[in-house]
Amino acid sequence: MSVVSHDITTAERRHELSPGITWVREGPGDPVDAAEPRFVELERLEPDWDGYGAQSIDARALRAARAVLGHPAFRDLPAPEVFPLPTGGVQLEWAAGPLELELEVEPGGATAVFVCDEEGTHYRFDGVLPADEQRLQLALARLAAHR
Amino acid sequence: MSVHDVEEVEDGDALLRRAPNQPSMVTRKGGTLRPSSGAFQPTRADDGVSVDVRRLLPDPSDPEGTLRGRLDYGLVELLARVPREHALDVHHTPQAENPARADIIGWRKFPREIQKRKQRELARSCVWVREPAAAGAGEESTPG
Image (cartoon, rainbow over all chains, first blue to last red; front, top):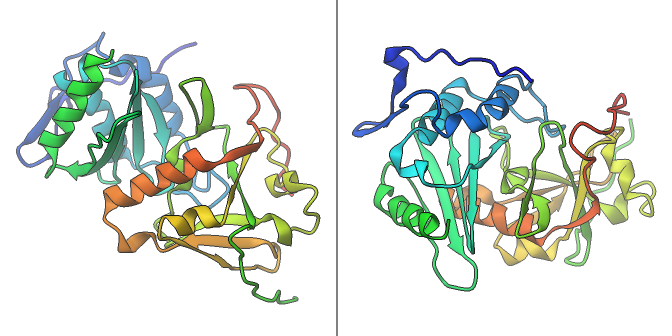
């Protein structure tokens, strides 16, 4: 199966999720490569792909989702599942041990919503980016510890 | 064109929702197959997540009729009380071509992360009426 090569220019390698938060893709071999076929699939979705009136997937959300996977904080995690969303956003989902993390990159690519919980405990790490970045870092640390 | 009467959706009513297979909206975690929470996200156009009320189908004994020819899709079911237990509501919104249609509404009064958590809870509360076809299997027929 051939994989469409996403030719990242120097300018595109640095994607600002929001002012003050920069996600940098390091290049071939990083986790985004494993998810690339799925990103390509999502790029090609037509409106109403779910039969309920879903929007096609926002190009900026796809770019931001790719950039998220290139961030060092996500590199120690298992490969995520990637899902399209009816609003045109992209959802990344990780699971490790009792922990599950969902990160939704919203259309436009500048904001994100996340929920994380640990089965068998009361730990919940929910929030929005960029405001709750520290809470997301806590969730990532717990997820990485269970890998 | 006939107009269908709006009916009360009871807490014990079974609600049906399709789970697309191409692209897959299904995840397997902890050995359990379930829809992604994204399968319960309202579209931007309105505040509702569309479902079919099984009791109001032309043939309630054939829930897979709601697949409307999308033979590789999965189909999940949850009771109307579940979204209501999460401070949402379910309203019957019949259409001429679909007398069983309803909408799970009330999402936008919550912050976005709370909406996502509710979507997640609904996805985890579902049971499969029909699991999606294996990836790459099953042919899509022309939607009826």
